[in-house]
Image 1 (cartoon, one colour):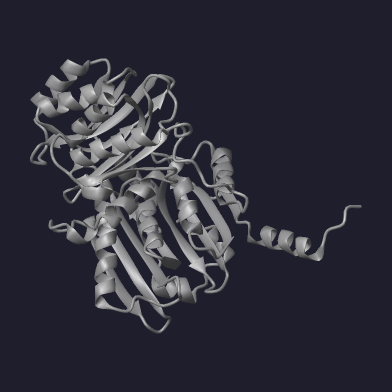
Image 2 (image 1 turned 90 degrees about the horizontal axis):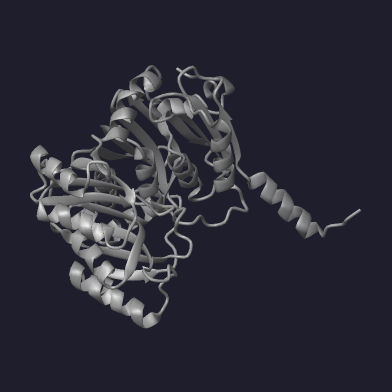
Length: 434
């Protein structure tokens, strides 16, 4: 019989005890699939669970987070697919969660196509036609853009662009060529030394875009009035800061809030989130990672501004255009040039290439940020190709908000008192669907 050193036995025991336990059950609730995650307290674990749900494409209708204020957490999520139905592939969702949360999990790649590519991070002041200029420069430098995401908000833009050599298909790793690419892109961005840079890995792309815009000071510098209600209050008796969010529901809303709190170095000890039709209400009880609550008015305002910016920057403005076409050299430079020449500005972009097929999504407005003229949209579609480019009127947000009425109605939000005094570890509450 194989013998283990006592230290090895202890290490295996700790690893087993700290490995999160995940349950995915479609039989408990009539309108949603129930996901339960039991885990040891570890900074970022909640974000990993929420990220895994988001990446699987499910909508979180309601749920709660609870802790014994010690070492153990329990998260419960009621989730559906985009059409408001129970999740059909519950086993696949369970496997994704277990893989993402396991103690042996490796850092996840940025995306399915990111292996063997060079990643460029771009951040700077936004202006009409900027993405067109960026893709034109990359094409001129013989860089093939395989995958990219770009967000604009508050007059700023952040983008993650995966490229490879246009001729060989290999990553671009020649130092002199990389410096030349960065220099040209900085000139386009007019963003100084940190406008463009090459990095080795990005992890979760959405999280990295949030980080880039936060590091750029976009949350604190924007001048427009916020459209999202966020409040931060003190609960001195228990040493918590209480964060409440009230806004229109949409996909990945919970991820954006949890991601922001995590990157600001706060720990969520308790929380509730619920949807009623197209409206979402969230409440979180947080402390800093050092165990203290928010301690100043300046800190409180900073948290409010960061949460408002994180929620609003993903609320894509403009007409959603979907492009599906065989990939070719210079495709993105051509398509975005057509947008620019017709007075359209790209507010969000998601570029994907699979098996030589380009599957891209653009959100466009006019250059003043107003809704685009339908005649202009029709002209652009005619020029690029009616078989390749089509309008999709915010399919995801519409489905997730409209169908959420059936899945999210009835339970209401738990209050602070119910979280702390009624003990959310009750099995009866865990199994409740209403």
